Amino acid sequence: MRNVFIIIKHEISTTLRKRSFWLTTFLLPAVILALSLGSQSLARSSMASGGSSPLLGGFMSGGKPIGYVDTAGVIEQIPEPPKSSRPWVVSSLQEYPTEAAAQAALNTKAISKYYIVSADFIQTGDLAVVDSNFSVFNSLENNDYFAYVLRLNLVKDANLAELLDDPTAKVESQGLAPQGGKKDEGFDAFGVPFAVLMIFYLVITMTSGFMLQSVTKEKENRTIEVLLLSVRPRDLMLGKILGLGVVALLQIAVWGGAMLMFGGVSLNGLSALGLPEDFFVWALLYFVLGYLLYASLLGALGALAPSTREGTQFTFLLLMPLFVPLMLNSVLIEAPNGGLTTFLSLFPLTSPVTMITRLAAGNVPIEQLLLGLVILAITTYGIIVYSARFFRADTLLSFNALNFKRILQEIRR
Image (cartoon, rainbow, N blue to C red; front, side, top):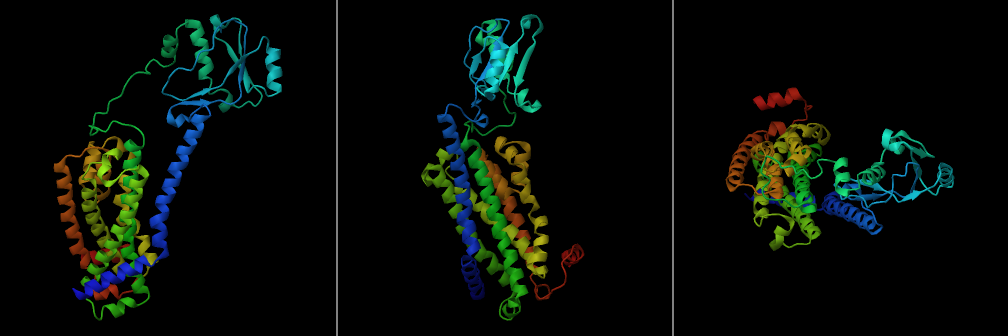
């Protein structure tokens, strides 16, 4: 065991001396925080100027006024926009007595465009729009507000005018999959689970990738030949996995702390972010087992690869299961107790990321948490035992090219 502890100490000190490690550890949360604060600042600025982004479901300012010539005498009042859930482009409307007056205003750029309500509008519904910078995509869209003004003046009832625009505006949809009681919207409903998903995905892939880099680098500079004179191959693997695991825990502690600071809560106030009080207990258990699983797989790959470059070419195949939760992030967050999400949270190759994301998105039954943990633990133990067979002197000292044929041969061995 003494040799194992020496290797653990060596891996920790070597990794912590890397400038790239610290840049990644602190730069990534800083970038995420800057983007989040930047978007919030833009949203507040937009709200202060009298409009809001359509992404936030509000009204979007249309800039210059829009003119209109009402030759039919239909428009008697200019109503406020309806409280619709969809975005509206709203500009102030300016009436002109004649088309020539409206055209003159358009020529001087006092208005962005103008509408002509034909004299027989009630019979024909003919409406013309004149824009100095004509574009099919710009001039024929964002006419909803003026159309609403016409409807309200025709029916003389705001509720009826809004219903004519969107008869299903008040229909509420209900997902068939239980959502775990998390009904609030905003950052807590989507941002926190997505942040958890990204943190766990990045930490597991990056820290397990350290295992591949460590083994292949020592093969390239021939350090492995010296180590094998005094250390058994499996002790070497165990020391590397445990040493890099300590580094991984440090990294996840920094990122988790950044998430808590961004949320403005303490460890005793996780409910403010919609997280259960025992969230970090389950997160730690699933992370440790997930790290051990993928670090063992990449360690076996590093034992076979003659160089870091060749080993990296096959990394994607081993880490492919972790891409699945990332690609299906909306499904995981919006339906945390759905069938697909439940399966991915129990399947051992995807459960380290999926189960914790699911726990952040909604309540997970305790029996599923325990079952996923048991399945993951059994699979991790099997992977470690199997990967240890690749840590042999003949593979660690081999510089044969890495390809699918050789990998299959080693698997059969």
